[in-house]
Length: 174
Image (cartoon, rainbow, N blue to C red; front, top):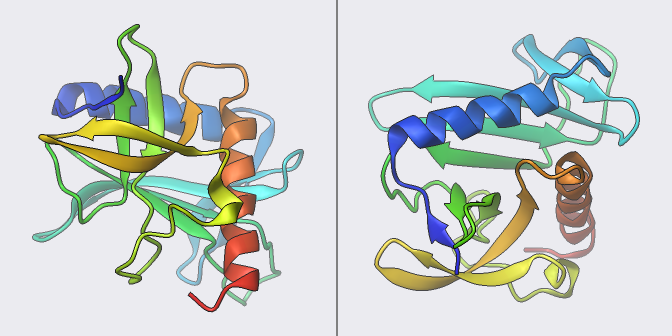
């Protein structure tokens, strides 16, 4: 059974691994997202990412931003999905999290709400491949498993999720 990882040191370690996988040498740096932030373009899977840490009074999370459209400057690149992971503890305001199974495998998960959308989109046809249940703090929750962190397919699984989100947004007036 999957359980949310709550320990800040563990979360930081796994977020560093996510960032490392997203920024490996096959990627190239570009400036985008409106405010000239460094993002990393995956030329094989055709998506960009911007992994970073945010520390504000009300937000204390690792912000992982993804998109599939790469526009030329000065236009900002549209965001397809943000997977924000709390720095420590359980904070369901952030839809992203890390979870561990009984064998010690670590997964990037998403709780199913998109943007300011208050309802979960977890039962939609676009996400059947990702749906699962897990112990999310004290309760059981339906979630999306995006991918297993140290697997060879992690970046491919992440890209598949990003494109499923894009397809959902293109076809549904959520």
